[in-house]
Amino acid sequence: MYTVVVYLKKRSATIVSYLPTPNGKPVVVKKPRAVAEELVNESTVKRSWAVGDAKAVSLKVRGRGLVVAVKIAGCSSLATPIIDREVRRAYKESADLIRRNALSQGVPEDVVDSYIKAWLKAVDGQLPPDDPDAKAVAERAPWAVVWAYGRYLVQSPPWC
Image 1 (tube, rainbow, N blue to C red):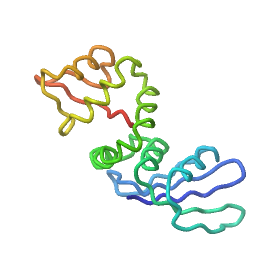
Image 2: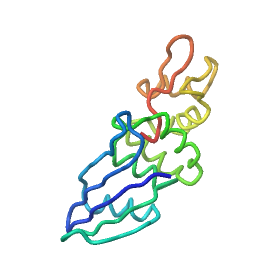
Image 3: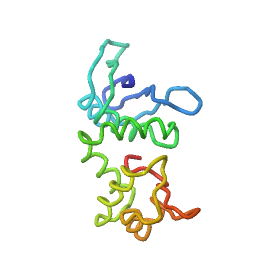
Image 4: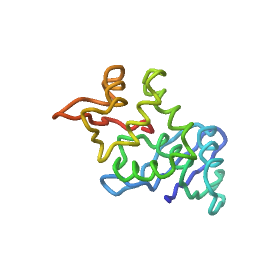
């Protein structure tokens, strides 16, 4: 469970995500209000207050809310191994969001399910050389799963 604070203005929102990052600092992004409202709807509101002309909302994010928060914050600024464990725990309730994120990465629709299966089977991002799902994904989406050092590696998780 992580905390996200959303400052909602008339048309825009500033989102401060206290997710694990390599440098330990929160991630701040400015997005349209509709994107922030989707995050608020998928999360639990801890507290809300007024800040000038903006409404501030403190959220507890887990499960579906975590997947939405990670997509908003951007994967490059986050500590991927820590977030990956949390998203794996929340997979059952957020499978549709993870599938949609994988499709938005450009993974062909016929291998998306194999990509997600390979990601769920991977241990520290590594898969055995005889894994059929990893082989299918590596042939069709080589940026997602790569063959290196005698095994398959999940290059980027499907939620990212």
